[in-house]
Length: 168
Image (cartoon, rainbow, N blue to C red; front, side, top):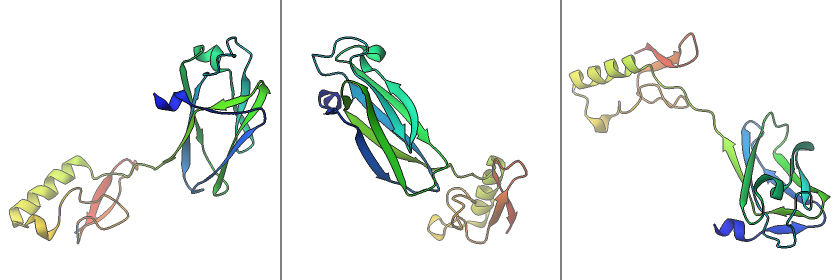
């Protein structure tokens, strides 16, 4: 609730330069609330949200939710070409207002081993009486950026939806 009790206001543009990893996509979460008692009608405060020089939304908080109410919106920035993400709030009518801005990297989900192979590998581990402290815990193939189970090699299945054990 405290987030929406304060805001930054400006008659000019408000600009943010966010440091990002150009290989990832980013979720930008914008938070607004019309907390200025002098703004009571639609069209009194209108501004554009511009991300990397692309106008992504026109915002009129009173039109969206009325006065003294929270309004949030999001935008996903994709296919970035640099390590800087530019966010601008540009006034159209009245001053610009923002209560908060969140920036989240969208990390792609890693594939996991096909469930029936996980069951088989756990049964093999149990039959060999491999103690937990010796490894072979969790998913045999994931995460893919390291060897989860020593001696096990995995590859994506033909559909690319799961990992399969290709070598032991």
